[in-house]
Length: 187
Image (cartoon, rainbow, N blue to C red):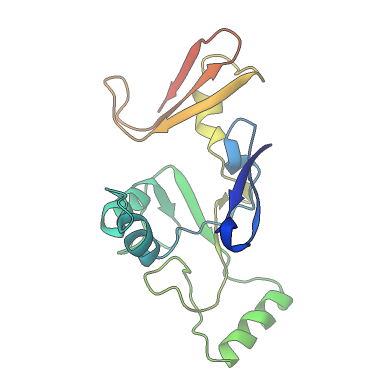
């Protein structure tokens, strides 16, 4: 795994540690907990766009989320369907999870079917990148479309949602550390 140093206001003595990144085909999507959390619109508007991140306002980024999603709850103002990333929502959890959710509702939190809606205050099951009981990883399209099996010494370099002449959709590429050879996989 990659360990990226992370510090939150180190000069004020706040938390520091590391963010983990997957050193495998599919990157962090192959090792994470499969929760699908986009953040709140205010995160994009008040933090990133306000800090000068052109193109990072909620208005700019929300259509990107909708394009990549294939949400099982269907399309809405905040959800997309037909994209390469399947999003599932557990509807009937185990009794302990239900008891925790009901306790939150009893304390006045609204129960949410989709915690990635515009109003995210509430309690419910997290959406997840799981389809038919299996992890949905960024490695799947790469694994099935690469002409050669990537070597363990190759590193993922980028992904793209831009159309190309040979592909109307998405893709990924890898660059070998030893030879510098570039391999592309496009849908």
